[in-house]
Length: 163
Image 1 (cartoon, one colour):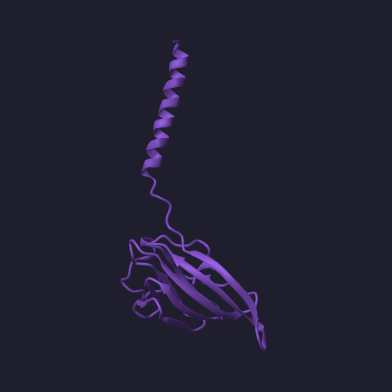
Image 2 (cartoon, helix red, strand yellow; image 1 turned 120 degrees about the vertical axis):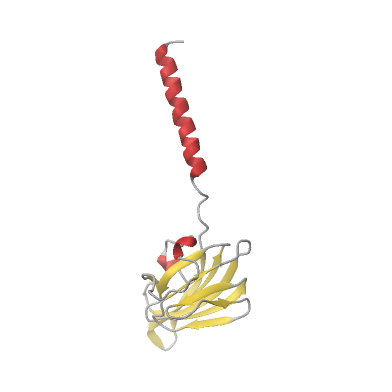
């Protein structure tokens, strides 16, 4: 074999091994909160508002970042599992299967699934200004609890998918 062939082979081997080593160090992609859009309809009697309905599935150890629903009321119903919710200035609280939670407009909040094994599913109805985004991301409040930091949970990168 020629020196040139050995050099090319050696370089290819180093690249292949290096790529495998890099891939081995990369963590699995984080679980993403999934949003299933059910329906959006105008609110009867108020042409400036609409009702938006979605079902969210939080895989184990997933979360959504701090956000608000600008000028929107959010009604949440637990379908499966327990979602932890934290509102600015309040300690985290659970939304359990069969229970409801109502968030007033413009409340800074976040939600996460603390379970390492079980998904959480919630049904969400929002009454919001027509055509407005579902959510707006905000900075972490100064008085956030000692609950896991946002960086401890993979977060959904799509603000419009945040409950």
